[in-house]
Image: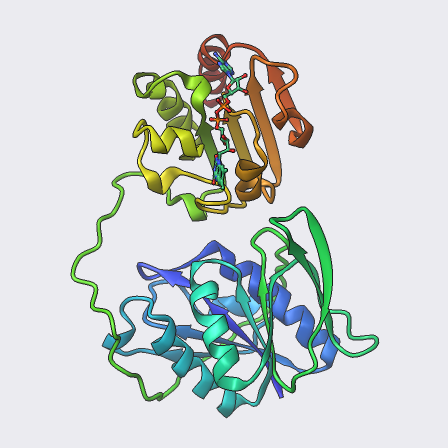
Length: 319
Ligand code: FAD
């Protein structure tokens, strides 16, 4: 019996979300008096043994050309083999793109109960239940899992990363890997930008920015802060910005450490995609804008006056 943690990677590097799920999975293993093991699909340039400092004892690595691109069905089948071999009773994912593609399929394959959007460690005092977000983060629910194997997909930024000492044993795992059903022929990278789903800092613009010609200031602020750019849905609908930057209920759900919203009203559908940000800063000229209720810091002012001052201040800070 063990806790198996899915280690997420992209372009040969471990994703930030992995450190969180490793810490989370290791803590569950401690709760259950068992060991935490990791599973990684593909090759990485990063030091895998070093992940031991997050509490994982062993990492099963599966390398195969068929794993070059995420395919939920193929990945789930491989992880099921690792889970069976290691006798995993709890399997942990981040509730991100990979987790959403793999965890439900794995759950069907292993007949395992699945809780997505987990917010905290499971309560094992009386059975096994997990607190999760519901209604786009507006409420919480405690969900009991009664199956033998339990799968949890943890919301990004829901758990504190903890580092200790220790190294992990890295072992190649020989798995049967199906050919993917979908062939990726080309991937277009958005050049020079931090991927929005991974970004620690996000600078986001709404209709208050008046038009695409005014995005230069947002781009400059984002560049200075090493941030990714995002926008509200009307901005993408009007083709001021590309649709992959649209956040919210019908766009991407993100959880950066810092979300700076400029000229965005804070409609519930927008908040649904950003309300898991650690710190929210809102700049809006309307003091009654609903976004201020969700903000940690608010600036009531005209974006076209505030932004140049912010940019100048960040430049000064950076020297
Ligand atoms: P507006 O509502 O027009 O707000 C602009 C804001 O800018 C105002 O608060 C105004 O005071 C401020 N402003 C104006 N000028 C300035 C200035 N010079 N300086 C500073 N502030 C200024 N929206 C999303 O974003 N994401 C979604 O995923 C999404 N999904 C939806 C799904 C459904 C089913 C529906 C019905 C709607 C959805 N929406 C979504 C739309 C959402 O309801 C809002 O209409 C939208 O978020 C508003 O975008 P906005 O804040 O940019 O624009």
